[in-house]
Length: 322
Length: 247
Image (tube, rainbow over all chains, first blue to last red; front, side, top):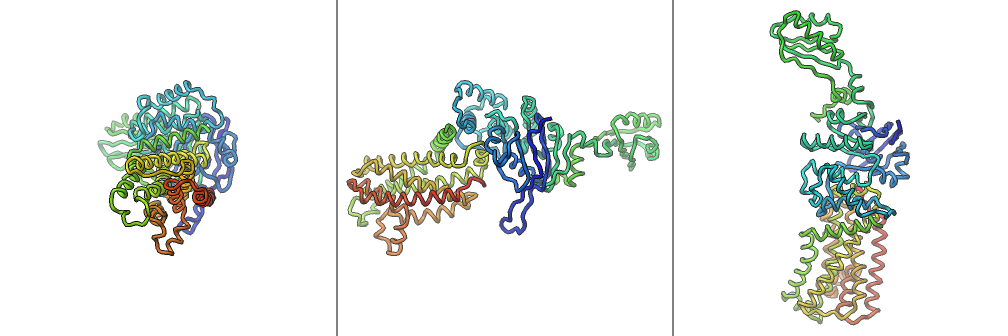
């Protein structure tokens, strides 16, 4: 696999500021690579260093030490060339006032023109229509950003970052603040873009999102990269991957389950029984056992481990309770 | 070059579509001018000429100054605080291109304001314009560049409107009241006169007054243009040194 981003021993230290007497190490020596064509997610609590890392890759911020290459280009000496080949969506979706979506797209496109002026008016107009269609805003070409809903605004920010056909797209918390429907629309859009061949690097607060979208994720905390792998592999690496729980009508002997080789742990507290098993395949064995002993049970639920469990284990933090 | 033109155009569109901004930058100075000309304010001032004649170039100088240190500074701070500058800097555009396109668009606005106020003065109040247009344009552009650059400098130090407001007031008030705008600086106490003679606005007001009220005199207007040019060089050097687009 070809690496489109290569980060080696990246460190970013912010100097003392205001009353605080200490320097702040936002990124403390991380190394990783992003492969061509993948959706790569950076996860971590606020202040983990995700945004700083992204900004350094994007050429918006300079590292204290370490090297970063994007599409084979150095992030410090070849910033402009990098900016021409990547698309960036920032957390803020605000734009210049009083300009329509169409005008803003024209403006952003012009910012990438540079010396080449061989732009054909017609194809450009066509490209603009296509872009608005892609983000499902075809009927909004003459609207202003302030008239858009949250989801539409967010989709528009993606459109502005695509005007120059970037090879890599950076999305900083693309679905924060969106309602569930808008979030799902955004996921579809991201998948569509990725299928069209764009490598995508995103940060997110939503484990479900990372699990659904990302081919690989890196989990960051306090400026360190704790783990990096496919979500499925990270989850599989957690022991006790599947939890089965149910209620029984009558009190039962917990020892009944300990004999099953598949069951790793039994927690029986009448009327609830929780079993930790190694794999989903073993569920039928449990049900069979319950049937053969004529045990009446209800509320049977199976909970597989999620990326959230991995995240909690690694960072010791809960996203929801932050 | 194309990106510069597009940014310039965008800035221009934004300016004219912003109704409130249009009101404050174009109509407000006109109202002030009308009020000063109609009300018996300037009656006792020993300017030797009709007050509506006297005050017109001063109001124009004030408008140019405010367009820079209030208009542009607040606007930049707004763009910064809403993350728009950062979004623009994520494209290959260079910060000087962005800054010059902003200043360029505003310079055109300043010229338009000058024309509107001048026509108002001539046709409504019978103000005279006996100097020459060429030196007027040079003065307006010089003054515009100085105060727009000053606006950029202020915006470099202010992160939000709350920080920008006291800075602009601290800079704007002395310029407004000591700058030969409403009354001749000879009517100021001696110490303030010395201070007033250091301010660029004084030379902009005086230069415009020379251009509007008196036949072209290279010695007098040339001196104002020279001082303003020196000021522009100083301000530009400071701008290059301190101006930053990062939050």
